[in-house]
View 1 (cartoon, rainbow, N blue to C red):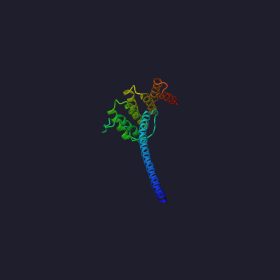
View 2: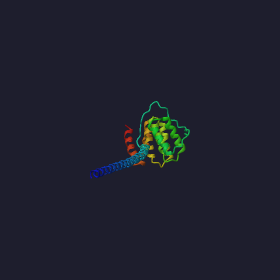
View 3: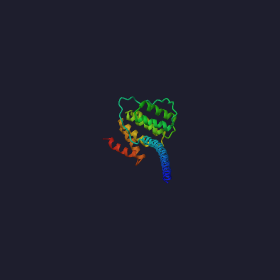
View 4: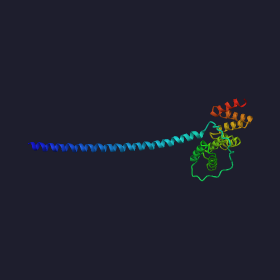
Length: 217
């Protein structure tokens, strides 16, 4: 009788051990599956974040491309901007990608690269919807370097080549500022009044009115 009880106890012990091992293995497997799922989820989130970062960067570039205000930074000792046709760069960049590079060069004050990129852009993508922005940015860069004559030419190119562009108001206002910097006050006043009359209620019109008040002081 005792022998049978002992045998029964041994069998029960073996059975319980097997159950415990099976449960442990199952739990480990579930943890592995959960970990794999978590890792996959993390990878998805990383990828989604990268895509979002690219979208955010694109939006930032678009906003910077507008540049409604004048960034009047001074860079003394710089040579005048060369308006001669630039050699077309050996690039396969699209108009949007090349314009993004132009913005980077503008912000980084890489003058030679900036001028070359703008020249290339205008020659390759003159009909691009970003061409007026490139010329306007070129005018701002010349203005910030106190190359007022060149700035006037660039702003006039925007006005004359792209008369229906959304940049005309900004270019016209910037032209008035450049004329004021050259002490051509009568011409500046005339241009600024054009901004007020043609674009009433616009940010450029408000700025132009402010400039007109200061013009004769």
